[in-house]
Length: 392
Image: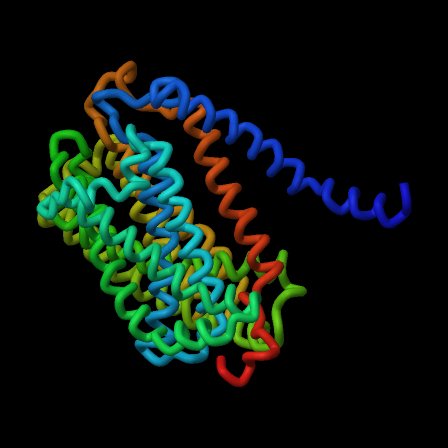
């Protein structure tokens, strides 16, 4: 073997590639089991628990954490904050991959996945009064909007200038459409649980849950952009140009300040919700203690640390807090969809994910990471294409 061949083979056998390869193999096994043996072969779902982590994590968390796309594009194009322009493409990419993976996860979860591919709910069963119909329609449309918003980067890479220029000209239209769609389905995902007052614990169940989901999606979007930016600077620093590197600190400060304000508002409306529903007595229970962990540990404390980071100019504190806040969004969505759902059932009837459910979720996330790495390494996402610098 030549020295060059030995070097190439060694470069592929990294720790990341080996772990990712193992996950992909297990994921493919889970996929075969799911589509040959049905849901019962790979899940612990039942009539009591028809929705598991494929909905709670892959969908609810995925949609919330993909909100960075509409938050960042709205800040840049609608509110005129051009200093955040360098963050738009990475945020759009993360959002597009997030929604694409949500669609992939639904293919595993839906009992008859071919109907989802064939747009069956929109063509045959137009349930316009159903929240699921509204969520499905908005998510499907927004996935296409994100695809169109990301296309200029891919078209610059492919050298297709005319189509790229057309899409750039309708950026504002796509941004407005995306914000409208996101407002609708982010809140409607919370509204899905309004029909389950007897199943969801009173501390998480509220008439305001659609508002909670929408406001927390803004927090998720701001925090995820900061989190993704931190990881990109660590692992793809060599791909960034001077514009991205120069705007990074300003982005961190600006989004950190916005996150602190929205978190303060979110904490306030959560407390108002407890008062409006007169659920104070539940806080003295075991479930109340866990609720306070979420409310204080993942809302109030991040708000405080974001504020301290902005006041002191501590960029590292803001970035660490963003990661903590992302974890808090995941905790919240899992509390609503899994942990505090069917809380009254005996332990034997409570849902706990099957091993292959967890494997499938990890597999889907890994596919997203691999796709992100390929795109960032090949397309002008973290840098401006030299032939289009004057047009950005």
